Image (cartoon, rainbow, N blue to C red; front, side):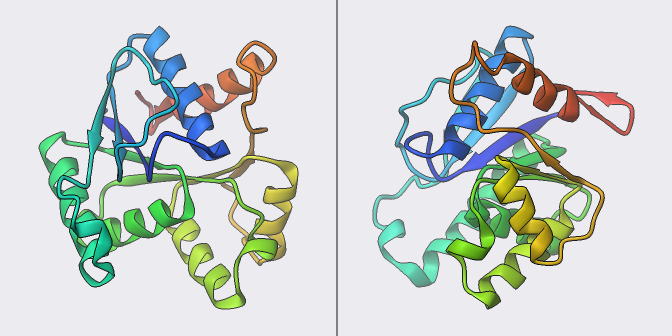
Length: 194
């Protein structure tokens, strides 16, 4: 099974750090995987067997809002097809939106896992929250980075049994059990080992 992580960058936030930790853990286990990022902003390490691919190849595209999203969708579609990606793990809500449209419009068989790092109630408007829940309902698993984030997803009406909470990885040594929990949670899909 081929899989990839999708996120805007590998810098700053908790979701990015979370994916960095998972990627490094996969590297220790010699698991080949991809990290698709929108922009060339990299502050976190990835696993030894990971390949970083930057979606924005043209520096002008990000500055044109009307084409930006379609360009990202086109590039993601091309990379998923070329690399035969079966499982896409999305690091932020913007990535969940992109993956949702990829699945609905182009690759209905692709499997999705969404990692949510934001308290939906505090950060988004009612319409935005409704849209995000639509993206989460399309995913096979949703991982909340804290108890508060998990509760906000439930409070917004998310009812699926595929919601998990894994505390945001701050320190690899302190949180080894949580990293293992995440890895163990995603390493098998339909009996296939990743």
